[in-house]
Image 1 (cartoon, rainbow, N blue to C red):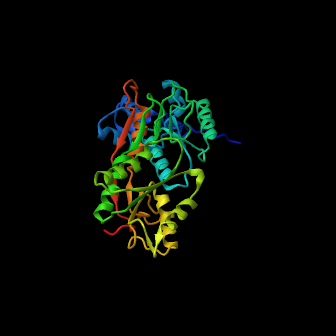
Image 2: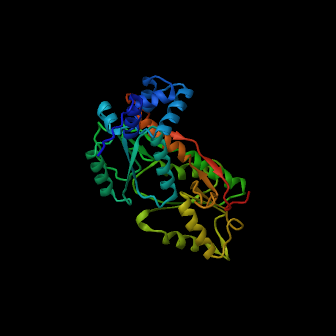
Image 3: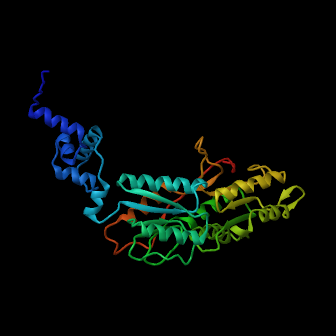
Length: 344
């Protein structure tokens, strides 16, 4: 039996090694035609020229290069993961916010750990304890527990609720949004406004929506009726309240502002049950800018929150290297958008 021996050249050996091993940063640098330090800067989100960044990203994609997060974490003493705590993702506002935070983190090559609490105050604290044990690099939370305990050494950003003077709160201009709703109803001839609110007992930035709304009518000398309920009281009292203010088939109010789009949708159903047409008989405005997933249309006329900017700003504040001079509140602008429940 004759034994055949194949002799490989150095180039063939190197080629086989490259096929059998994962690409390295050196491979990416060689493919992109840049220095190894440039590749490192791109993967660590350090500013470089846009052309360099594009070449490195294209080379990494071509070679199938993936950042070794574990090794990167050992070198920088980070996990490159952030926890997001929300009540749920069934509410379109929360789900859109979660998507925005995920995209903002992914652009910085961070992972997102999502924890849901179902508005349970004890569950919120358990989530905090869990993510602290997992050694995340920070937490973004939309919570309702006024006594929430967070390790002060862990970067934390709160959305819509002031947590402490040392924790940044990111929110929309809720007071200004309430004013926009009032001005729109005044433009439509409203002389008997109604504000409806349901939410947490814990004070938060969203409470300013009603304050802004009522301030506009107060300046005009117009009385503004209001019904403010807590979550545990449910929606039935709103139906009873509206039914109790009907006279001769007409509602005592000629314009309604609801604290959220979700409440506005329920109120619209209650009004239709009472034989009233929206917006022909009574215009209705919500708050949040909630859209149909299928069509992208607004569920109702609404004050639109800049959810993408809320997410981006929260991530930016959380990952900021210098935390010595963080703002206690960042307030982002809102806008009115028609959605079929007002006459335009």
